[in-house]
Length: 339
Image (tube, rainbow, N blue to C red; front, side):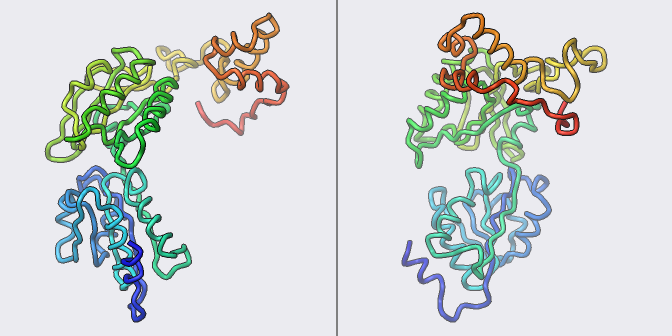
């Protein structure tokens, strides 16, 4: 690769070009941003995985097109730099968002290895797009309304123990999780192992939505549960959304509550419950929890008991008790604008 990068910058190179890292969203042109479409329109060269090129076929007619296979991400970046050094505008496309399991990361690695800096004549622009988790969530309801994360099950570049530790941690922490790259023709056991790890911490009937080819011709949506998800039709074009302990499915929609029912009476127009105030932390928020913790400790509960009771690390409990309670001063009304 070093030899290619050296050859990519001839002494008589034309005016500096530009690399545009374009997130094309789920694949439907209707769901691409205006800037993404404009970037492809102004590009001299369009580079991407063959499937992604097909998704934007109507936008790339008459342009130089460089098609690469699935495992040729570094080659795509090298080709983009070579074309930019030759004075061309390059649209290097990714499905979803270029910065979420997309081409932004490997492109910057190639750029930095070549000696590129942000002051270089070759400009780089990142154009965001809707990632798979956003697109899939929109099709099934509102599963990401509370805290969530994304984990890729691909072990082509990441050791499996690292992936397993992350799966176990987020399952225990009750995150809604979007699983990327859940299964392929060769990688069939990873989704089973993910299921096994989640079942250590989640109920078997935890809602799961599996979306394949979101907003594409062969779109398919399946609602299932954690204990059955590994039996579903899952492939590389699928995204698996696993709910948290409060997620529910009703009338064909998967919803994760934000927590309004903890503070408001949902049946009478949203008046606050006794002891709660709009715009202020819950009575069971940080300050309320600190007071409870101090009281339990004063009543004789030791650190180990408190750690088990509140499901938090013992050293965190100890450090929290060592901090004066008045160190956590309440925010003023102007500082808090949340519900």
